[in-house]
Image 1 (cartoon, one colour):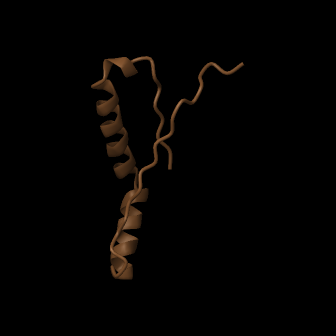
Image 2: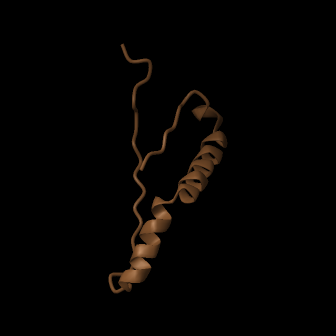
Length: 64
């Protein structure tokens, strides 16, 4: 039997202008895929969830 149950999923949407040059699009895509971006996003999510005591029992994961 599972020890946890998923109660919600949140999705992050990143939009860019449709006429952005291909080089800029690729630069943005590479930044979003970088370990540094994911590390900073995890830290931000951790800080946000820690700001709400009612979420203390919740476990949050972030994946690509």
